[in-house]
Image (cartoon, rainbow, N blue to C red; front, side, top):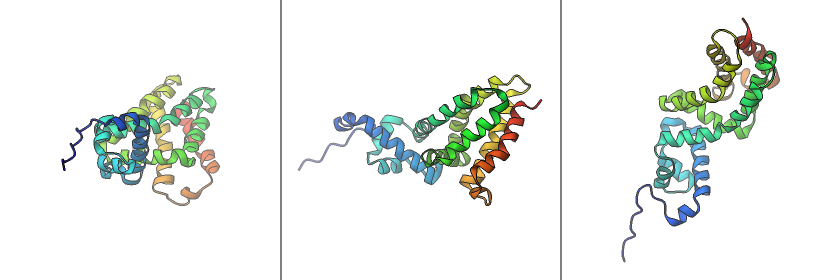
Length: 204
């Protein structure tokens, strides 16, 4: 019996090529789940491939390195934030703190968007490569747009402080799960945080 010819690394078969959109989606879904559960350092391309039901060479073919897989998964997971960005940026500045707070916590409270957000945050906390991807996306897609609206000194710093307030609270509530914050009513959190975020952004 003739041994099967090994598949060339990174080159999909005809079957894989025909199924490319579905395979890419499975890989991205598996990557988000793996990064969420294991973090960046403990996630491997082989593990992502196994979870997606594909050969690891196919992951390399479509996305390249683990960092590139992470960035692709984050970009897809980050798409709801782009919608939030428009909701936050549009409208009068005197309500931007509540809009920003409500929009961000709305994403965290939704199970469909919470899982990819957990993957991003957990990985960014533990790995510099993942953190660099996160910083790039947050800065370019959200904070820069908000800062451009602020006609005050240090607009970038103001936007970053507002984001830090929200990210820090989200870390304690959804990742570390500190009580009573973890089980507090979201509306109570929003009511207390929104004025602080507003002050960072618009207080002289």
